Length: 493
Ligand code: NAD
Image (cartoon, rainbow, N blue to C red; front, side, top):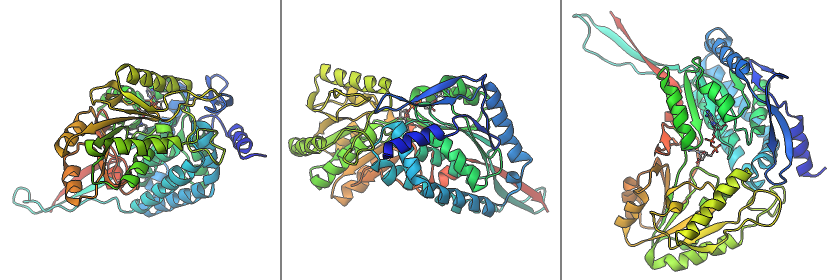
């Protein structure tokens, strides 16, 4: 059996239904939706959607696990052991996860093996280590009515967390939400993307095998406007952690105001990659190409605004075009493939529409721009040069393999252009000048700045943005604390 056929069989064998309170729940009354392979355009499986009854049951199960079950009483160290067991099982099944992710999302097989799965495993291991280190402080105060006091803070789990993930990297982004929430002692209801729900169903199986008590992790497959709406509006949810588009982020934020519930929003980006004349141009060309073509450009941190110093502009564009020419579009299961298909027809058409707008607005098409004549939602790797920062292709997130190259004159103008965006997620500086690197890293508006490497990932590093890129942080200590609430206790002695 070929690797593709084996992956298709695995997809058909998954329990394609909600996982609630430790049980898979089929319901003939609930609606179902098709999961489509973006490369063959064929149906992979049919998934039963979580309806209102399933959402109610999941919230009740998550609440019971927190308030009445062993999870709520479990020590941090024991939670850490469960997270380690989870990481171990994830690692053992990494090949299955990678194949399902390629099948469902359309990404070339190497990417989940080198990025998504190792990152997901590392994230569970990192937060396993945090689980017994969720601490408060003892705080000296001036006493109370002439008597001494002992004051301290404790960090408590925030409660039932609704985690909503996007289709571009559902395993890795799922791990960013599950691991810190579980380490903090919360319970979680995961609503995976309808376009790529398969690996989240496998995550539920892994949690079950790792030995998490029932109700600690619930997985509710379903569409955004149906299951997603039911979940974010449910009063039993204490926190919403959302990754997706700014349009949906606005709906999630509005729902969270009902009950004044905290919300973490990881939205899109229009991240600059700034190449200075003193950069190592070969390394920069490799990094910039990765930054816009990895995962078909369907990456929140995609370096889609490629800003190049005027004196090296033409030479750099040539180098970048040479990298684009080497991209091999194809089936993610072919070993030679370096770029797969976009996730669905809607996303392909959205990307093609932006390419048309780029042409109409007068940017120069250097390479790509077409949809290959074959099945699947493919779009060629595309570069526009001679663009201005006020063009639509420089302002709006395309979420596809389309780079917009913008020249700049000096450092001052580079920072001004980089910061002239409603997004502020990530930025990359390519320079060999240490002083310039540190000075400009401080001036560029972004949640994360990288120098001489596109978007380094590590679960220890806080991740998130501001403006249209969202609010709050995932990962690192900040990500852990975002799943806790701080209680102050004062004892009058
Ligand atoms: P999307 O907003 O359409 O969907 C994201 C998730 O929200 C899905 O699970 C979807 O079912 C759900 N959803 C949709 N409507 C909903 C509603 N009304 N109520 C509740 N849930 C709802 O985004 P997408 O198309 O899946 O992902 C692409 C977008 O996500 C891009 O804009 C991209 O930049 C962004 N993204 C950001 C990050 C990050 O870390 N900042 C990471 C990946 C993707």
